[in-house]
Image (cartoon, rainbow, N blue to C red):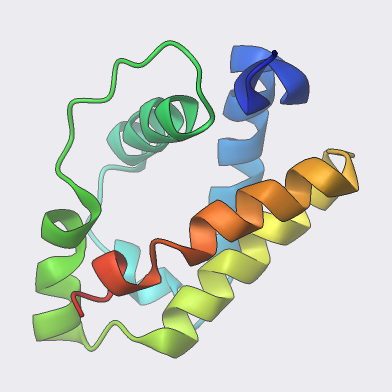
Length: 122
């Protein structure tokens, strides 16, 4: 059985998705402030590695877990449900823009939704 990673087109698709995804996020006035001062090349590389792992591809992700990676944003910057919903919306729009089949978009969004409590440190 093929992984989601293979079904969406492998590394090239994940790289394209991350580029489109962050372009959307950085244009969003609700989310953009969370990325002030962030090295976006490093951020994109971390996100590519993370999504590759989540999608069942060859993993090189060595970053923090979701709870640890977002803790300071929850505690110091007020990261909450509205932000999570906005990010999820941008992810779904990105996948649809890349013509990912609806069943895969649904599966990916279900996985994304399952991370809410970890991202928001609940």
